Image (cartoon, rainbow, N blue to C red; front, top):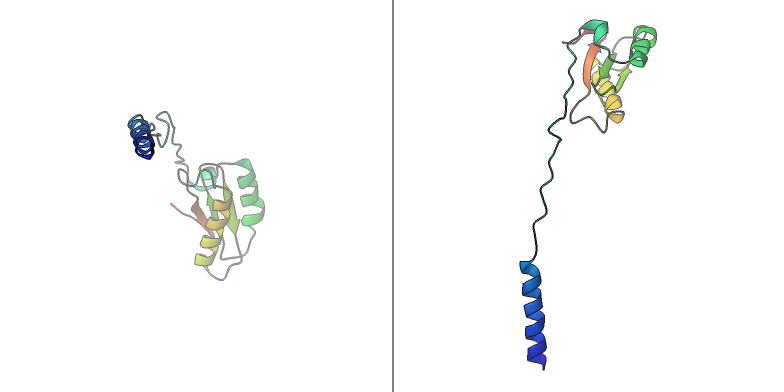
Length: 120
């Protein structure tokens, strides 16, 4: 009795495993995905009205060691009055990335302005 039960159990396990089908592979991104670009220079490169207003009214008047970062997704941020230019760039990028979590892989935040100069 034990042998027949064991054989029956083993047979049902083998038959179940032979019916397993591999799940379909998931595509990483849709084929119709459009990647946006921004070829503008200077102030025209700022892509949102809110970012432009902040740039003109607050960032432009801020003290040195400042950096402005933005993403093509629309995320942006800036930092000023840091201990160095590198500190300002890092702080601005981190702040921008916090607002860009869903798009950072496709549209990463980039520094576009440092102190009084545009970055290419």
